[in-house]
Picture (tube, one colour):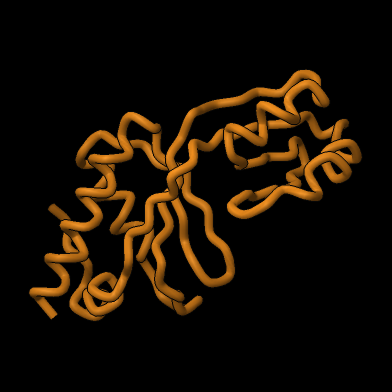
Length: 149
């Protein structure tokens, strides 16, 4: 099992693993529907994420929101349900390797992640059926770091 570096252990030791209660979807909207997406998605509430890429509009949103909006789009690809887990700690933008530790731990346990970063925090999506095990593994990592700093 990969442990964070000695320098990074205090960061993990103070991290709160915060699972969100809602189910989430990952949706790819064709790029030609960007204007519709900008208009239709403008009132999404947290947590949601919209990324405008050169080939798509990629959206992470609550299943309940997507169920209300789905009919306003054509040709979308969607995956879910996912669980959203937030690493509730303000991360220094110069910190190197935080998500690599997380992804290595979860990969060792056969759990696929979709990583999202905001200015202050990192988040991951995991398949809903992997959520409880993911939270357990991450909290065990935090606990191990607390005892080794």
